[in-house]
Length: 300
Image (tube, rainbow, N blue to C red; front, side, top):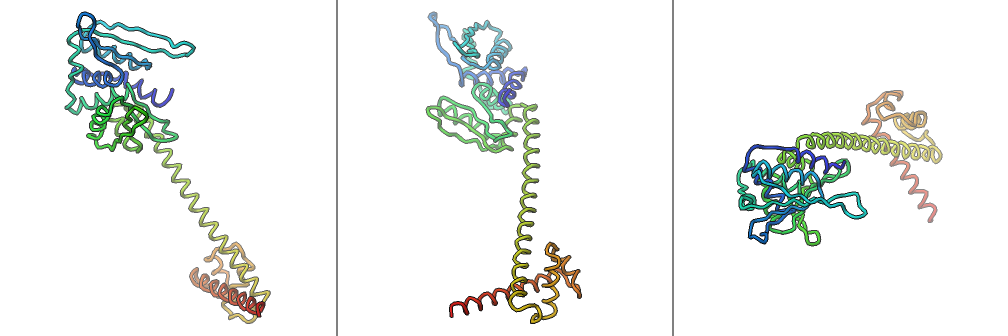
């Protein structure tokens, strides 16, 4: 089952005895995948159409708890496909309470967002990316939903996708907050575990990359030092060098893989890391001057 499917299964099982919250959740589901009309007798009729079984089950449960009225259900199997569509119908003037549901209290805002996600939401696999979205058919509904989501401190945005308006979150921490708002606590814990593992993996990769870069830098410096020292040896020899530079040159040739601190301790008169570094820079300057002189002589 996809991560979206797990969230919806959890939300479908969520239950509250507060009638106002049930009305708010029903209102969101109806706005996302339902509509009101009148039958031939002029009675208020509500229809919800969905291909998601948890949505159908939740609608049935909420209607029974809130109004205790009969639900007519038509189930169709799509030709040549292994999926079903669910069509639920209710009749009665009391259904106007769903249409006119008040979504002002914090608990009702939570319920509305929960119903909206259940009916028209989805989330990417968190092991690959962080993306939660709810698709709305009308711009004003998307704006309303965005306002409700952002009232909990998130930064939901809207993007138009063909004729639909998509309210979305892309930050992992904000998606965690939204799962908490919807009271999908099992999914929240699973997402947090994924985030922790990804952060640990990223931290390890950064450390390895940093250490690899340092090693490459050290190796490259050692190779240049060896080349400079070998050039001096093959050009003018070491006898013309001051004793300190000669000592470093010979020791570096003898211990090409030694770190600067270790190299300093191997000298006849040991010096610290900075002293070794200073002498190697001097050797590099001498080698560069010898190369420049050779080039000038070549052109002359």
